[in-house]
Length: 197
Image (cartoon, rainbow, N blue to C red):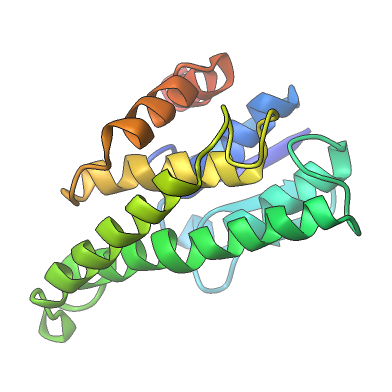
């Protein structure tokens, strides 16, 4: 059985949601970022980490890719044009959504106070708004890559949720309704309940 290191209010949620979608059992160790417990699994103290037998894996997107490939679900097969398109979407989301939100978090509460530049958040919010419009324009079916849910869907919805908590500009109605529909999936609901249960 897998163990996820990190809680639902972090990028660990992406991994938990994926495991729920895959129907894989897992235990949760809700270690806080940079805590002594988190450093047992990642010397930097960053979460999430995934324990799979003797292996400890880090980075939420790397973990999600590993799980999707290992279980042959939520992904296009490796070595196919469909996978290259999926990976392009994943990398775009990391650059244009995740990195922007992470930069804002660093200047809000991660960096020491003297290193924070609060004014930078205005430009980050503008960049996020532009990227959200691009994503909305690219969304043509029920999921980002077509008719089947894949890793980029989980990543995008997690970032949209993060943006709400960070008081970023609201995404347009199309993206908002799409994200809402994915938040209603049983796997999402089960992952949200995991830490409480």
